[in-house]
Amino acid sequence: MPESYKKTKPDKTYDNIIIGSGISGSGLAAILAREGQSSLVLERHYTPGGFTHVFKRRGYEWDVGVHYIGQVHQKRSFIRRVFNYITAEQLQWAELSDNYDRIIFGNKSYDFFKGKENFKNKLKEYFQAPEDQKSIDKYVNLIREASRTSRGLFATRVIPKLTGKLFGRFISGKSKEFYSKTTREVLESFISNPSLIGVLTGQFGDYGMSPGESSFIMHAMLVNHYFDGGSYPVGGSSRIFDTIEPTIKSAGGDVFVNAEVDEILIKNKKAVGVKMVDGKEFYAKSIISSTGVHNTYNQLLKGQHVSQTNLRKVNELKYSVAHLCLYIGFKETPEALNIPKTNLWIYPDNYDHDENIRKYLKDPENEEFPVVYISFPAAKDPDFQNRYPGKSTIEIITLTDYEIFKKWESKEWKKRGKEYEDMKEQYSQRLLQKLYEQMPQLKGKVDYYELSTPLSTKHFVNYDHGEIYGLEHSPERFDSRAIHVKSSVKNLYLTGQDIVSCGIAGALLSAVVTSTSLTGKSIIKKIAKSGIMDKK
Ligand SMILES: Cc1cc2nc3c(=O)[nH]c(=O)nc-3n(C[C@H](O)[C@H](O)[C@H](O)COP(=O)(O)OP(=O)(O)OC[C@H]3O[C@@H](n4cnc5c(N)ncnc54)[C@H](O)[C@@H]3O)c2cc1C
Picture (tube, protein in one colour):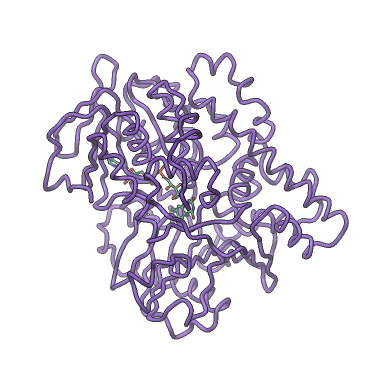
């Protein structure tokens, strides 16, 4: 377990200082440890792991930002190899059902099945018109093609900036064709059935942007990521950090929680260290921020030491969406309650996600939720009953607007007053209603529930607008030259979900990309060839 900065202070020097202990920060520290470099990882929360942390209350435990991860159960996949590399194979995965996602519109439901062929065949059962069937084949091929081109796009995040300026378009190759268009633009170019588009984009909550707004490359990467199903970490999502930490320590690194960085220290135009909120200073050769592009430039650099043009470009990048999450506990096992492993995506009886969101944002208290996602962690984790015998948990998520909660932002956690609590209760009841509509057997069985709002996300993980996925995944984001692992300050690097994309895999890949830039070595090749392979 990491030390608390409140009790102990770091008393040695390290090669690197990494701000934030999420999957990108801790993953990067572990990759650098395998290069013999020590890192001091400073985490502001009282628990490590960023969005991979869990919280415990009233005898239950819930994950906050991990519900399923694709490709980790495929032993040869790159992402599985990265996990093996940073955890010395200590992290195990449990696959969800073959039917990993269920997309529900009104009283119709559509199941997504593991395996490209199964995925297609199942969809063709729902959409039998010859034109739709052709569109489904074309769609699956296009998803593969577009996600393959993303490699070129992300290479531009790591190549020297001048090379990027001169040859960026050439290096990003065909990806521009996909990232510069919205998901809707691409799909409508060959699919005429709006219901089919609604179903195919039924996982849009995984990147938090509707088809009319999101970049098609993000949609493609996400769908491709889950084509072969999804998995959950055995022992819960906190196992992710717990299995990475020993690798960080193996090279003399340390992780401190309750350790909030106030400022990145710059001397002679170079990043040299960090100043903590208590005023103490720590120094290292390289400083890496995993706290997001906005936090790094505006909070930690305080808008200084970067050119105004660069800062303007950063500030043009918009925040992703905020969310509400209802955490629920039951005093019965998933089997007794008949709880599945399949994720549910519940929509209004209207297949146009953009319209549903527009309507909802105009009148969030009365309009239907534009998306409700239900996850069943206790059923997904084969170890849950060992830790919480006879119990189950469920999480229900919907999107929301930070502005609704802004008026309470200066109030302390747990002390935001009756109006806030009443509003939370109303949202909780509406979300419970959605659960009962799908699973009436759960009525009367809820033992405990608690709602998190965008203020919780801001309070615990330091996203200023309660955004869950860092920067929004729009065509503008992917086109921006302001996103690069090397900041405009020497020795200051960035990593995390803003560099590649949101998602555990995206954030972890950003750690690979940042480590490549920092060490000048081909870390990708090393991991791909790494000797540590599964014995299973
Ligand atoms: C509700 C929800 C559900 C999700 N579900 C999934 C899923 O099922 N599958 C999936 O793949 N992805 C999912 N994601 C996305 C995924 O969790 C994130 O994209 C990923 O974890 C981001 O990792 P990161 O390292 O970039 O950032 P983070 O995990 O946010 O880490 C950044 C860290 O920096 C710390 N920090 C910030 N400021 C400071 C400071 N000044 N000093 C010190 N520390 C600081 C923060 O406290 C935080 O711990 C979900 C996210 C959410 C919110």
